[in-house]
Length: 443
Image (cartoon, helix red, strand yellow):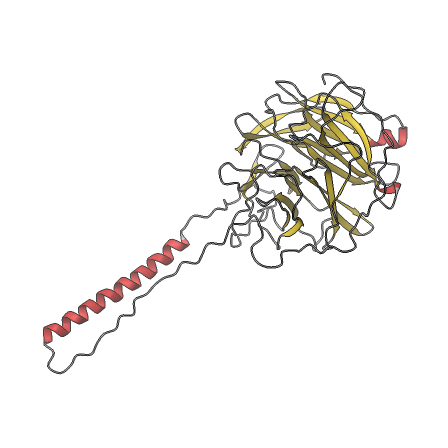
């Protein structure tokens, strides 16, 4: 992929219209108790006190015996009081698993410090996805976060601040059927007065499945968006972008990118492929099998970000020392000029390791934050600005092969990744200039 490839044109391979929103969903929501993926809350310390009972002296008790008994009682009482005080002090000074946010001058951040729940633990190398609702309001949280539990369920958590403290009971999206370790991609859009959330994941049969919800409605029944194709069994690639531009002026639909086990019309046996739908085309979703990217690495990740009506697609080319590549598609050219095509515009760092995931997010000012992992396990951030990818900086060491997800808020890019050993999830917020805003556990 050293130069732009001739890509499969838009093929009108249509899926039959399927039910987009479920009319009734009987799957449970967690309304009480500890949801899957959470550790049990530590028990409260119990302070035991001695109930020293002193027996009254009887007539005739010797004077020295009486004072000996009294001295023993006093010693026991003082020991119990001292033990209670010491236990209280130790409880208050015990370790806190939530690091304090790093001060960042004038950058707004939520510095409240509520009681810290146990950290979220997920399936090893679980897919993860973090989104900011398309339309913010007092009724919507700051973030929605998706992950897979050790039992294989896919869970949605809501967060009201950048401290990543869960603000509501977890919601069960999928109880079973998702592939173990599936990548997860989520998006949000606002239309007709409602904010919709849509999640994509891989099932055990090689399908790209999707489900959505509006507000607090039940999630729709998952269905497959692919026609005549299936994913590569070892792929880490799954990404989604959406927008609601005015009809025929920009993207007004959803674009999904996944690692396919085929690459029709090319000499590649596997590659990243595009499947998508347009909101204006039908009241029911019609999914089209569209572009192919021959020579791309399906065992690594893929990411997309929309900037000024242009889709920025990030992937790794399938070579020993693979570079991050950026491909662009202009929706203005597509809808207004009628001459759109995918073009490889630039390449980025070559230290992204084979099999690394990619996450990308645009800051609304034509800058993309790009996150990836090196061979040593280091998560790094690069920037796309102007016409080049640069300004790489190391962040934290993560579980090798961790999935990555990113969002933009409070003038900062936030990336979530899985830590080594215990499966806990961590986040890192960093500004365009490289200043750290906060870091800690997802709880």
